[in-house]
Amino acid sequence: MRKVMSIAAAAIVLLGLVYWGFFREKATVDTVAIFAANFKPETTLIKDILGGAGLLPPDSLAQDSLKAALVLYDAGKYKEATVALDSFLVRHPANDTAQFYLGMGHLNEERYARAVEVLEPVSQNEASAFQLSAMWYLGLCYFKVDGGFPKAEEIFTSLANNPESKDRQSAQGILQMIGH
Image 1 (cartoon, rainbow, N blue to C red):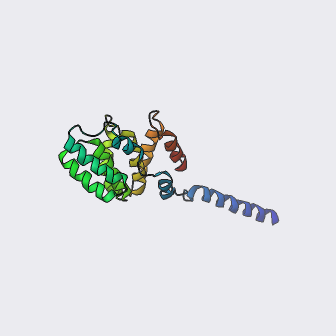
Image 2 (cartoon, one colour):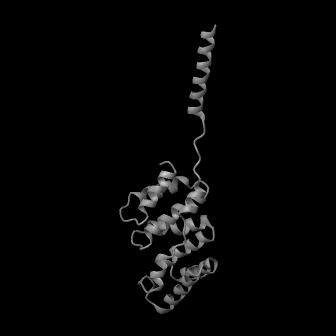
Image 3 (cartoon, one colour):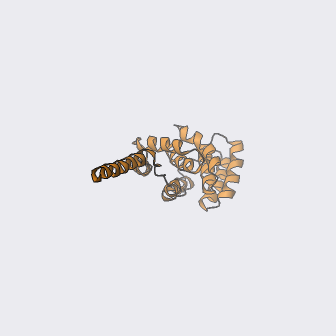
């Protein structure tokens, strides 16, 4: 009788372990923590641009209005900067500097879906000096929008495999954090 009880107890424990192994929920990824650990407002490129790195438009009026918008961004006045950049882009819709910083302004204002709309084309523009930076921030944005996790994973995989990306190691770290 004891032998039967021992076998029954062992079978119950075994079945419990099998059930737990197959049906337990996978650990959820804390995308809020990943975002918080990896998001910093972009300040490196803007210092170069405002210092005359040649990414401003050649005509002086356009240059002045874009520069004024970027000064607002640099001062942390993101709402005002997005208004100024939107206005600039009406007249200069192909300017990737304005597009990138418009997306960054929306990101800093926590308007993630709008930031995705603006940063997506910049991230796909191979001629843009902002392409890889736009990809980085776009990946972070996707962590904040509903259903964006697969796109974020795809972007960080691309950055992790790109030897030209300054964020390559950080992208690899994010992939490890999400269990990729």
